[in-house]
Image 1: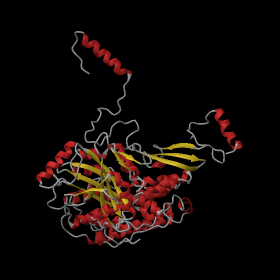
Image 2: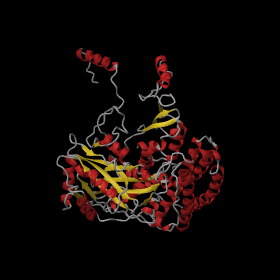
Image 3: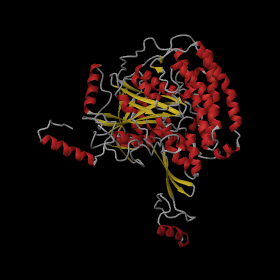
Image 4: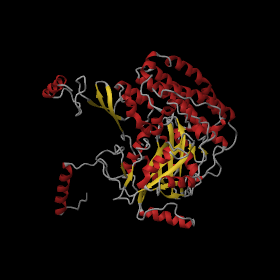
Length: 397
Length: 218
C-alpha cells in the first residue's frame, strides 16, 4: 500500500462519512477503494423471506458473507415437545410451506420407525403421488424465482405459478387445503383418493411435459440465463459432502446421492427412474438438475398412477388418539424437494415426544453460502442464494 | 461413484471394537436403542472425540463421510431417574451410562455416501448441566456441523470448543438462557422493557394503598 493510494481515503476521512455505511478496519485495497459492509435484508426481495446476508464488498466483489437468520424462529421443536405426536403433524406443514406433503411424510416416516408401524401398499402409492406432485410444483416455482432474480421479471414466474396452481387444485380437492395439507397420518394417509381424483392427477401429469418443453424453450438456451448462471457459484464435490449439502445442490456437483435410491424408503425401489447429475456444481447445473428431476418425477407419477392398487389408505390398527410409542429413538429422512429432510425423535414412553428435532435441508445447505459467494459479484450472490432454494419457515423453524 | 445401493446396516459392535483399537479409550459404551428402529449409538469419550471422528471419516472401513444431523438433548436429573425407572420396569439395563445429576448430550447422525451405510449415531455427554458444559466441536472434521452446533449452543448451552464461530444463531444476541432446556421458564412478555410509565404506575398504586381507598393490586 503506497502513500499515493492511501491519500484519497484519508481525504474522505477528514470530510466525514459520505453515506451511512460501516467501513471495515482493513487497509484500503489496491484500487484505493475501502471495503464496505452491506446488510442485505432482512427485508430485501432477493432474500426469499426474512433473511439477511451481512456482506463485505470490495468494489462489487464479495470478500466476506455471513448469513443471519432467526427472524421467523418460533421454536417449533419446543412446541412439539408440549403436544402429542399427532399434534405436531399440522406444524410440520409450516416448515417448508411449499411442500407440506413431503414434510408430513418425513415426520410420519420417523414416527413409523419409532413405533414400528406398517404402512399399507395403497397408502405408500398415495404418498409417492402426492410427494412427486409436490416436487414438481416446488421445482417449477424455484426456477421461476431464480430467473426472476436474474431479471426475467414476471413471465416465467407467472407460467410457473399457473402450473403450480393446477397441482394445488389437486391438493385442495384431496385435503381441503392448498398448501397446509396436513395429509399424512402414522400408518397411512388421512383420507382416500377417489378414482376421479386419480384421473385428474393423470391429466395434470400428462399435460406437464408439454409445459416443461415450452418452459425450457423459453429458458434453457436463453443467453442471459446462460451467461448469468454458468460458472457462477461453483461448488466442489468434497466440500459439498463435508458440508452436508443435499438434494439438487449436491447432485449438481455430480455426487450420485438421492435418498429415493439410497434409502429406497417407501416403495421407491419399484419405480423406474433416473437420477440426473451435474458436473460443474454451478447455478446452471442446479437449474438443469431441477428441470431433469421434474421429468423423472413425471415418469414416477405415470407409473404410480397406473399401478396404484386397491386396499387400505391407512393401517387399520394405527392409533390416532392416545398414541404412545415405546421408549427409544429414531431418525428418519426422506428426499424432500430441497434436500434431505430428517426428523429425530426420542420417546420416553409418554404421549408427547421427549425430543423432537428437524433436520432442515435448506438450513444446512446455507452453511457453504459464503464459500460459493466469495469472489463473485454482489449481483451473483443474489442468484447463488436463489439457486440454493431456501424457505425461511424451514431455516428458522 | 456407484449408487445403485440400498442403505445397509452395519455391525456396531465390530465398529466399536475397531475404533477402540485405533483410538484407545475413545468408546465409553454402546447405547442400545429399544425401539423398533434399532438405531444404536456409540457414546464417545469427549477427550478423544476429535481423533475418533477423524478415524471414522478417513480410516474406518465404512468411511463415514456424511454428517447428516447434529443436535442436543437435555437430560435433567429427574428425567434420567425416570428413564432408569422405566427401564427397570422393562427389566432392562438403562441404555446409557449416564452421569449422575443430569447432563447435556450432543447427538451426531452419520452416513456413508461411498459405502451406502447408516445411520451411525454418536453421542457426547457433558459432565453436568450448568458448569461443565464444554464438548469438543466436530466442525473441523465435518463442516456440516457448523450451523447445527451453533444451534445446539444457542438453544441448549453446550459450549463447543474449537468451533470457528460460536454465536447464537436463532435467538438474538442479547437473549439470556437456553430455551430448549427442559427447565427453561418463559418470560411473561418477551418484548417487555421498563418504561417511565412503570414508575408512575407504582407510585400511584403506593399512594392509593396508603389511603383508605380499596387496595389495588398490580
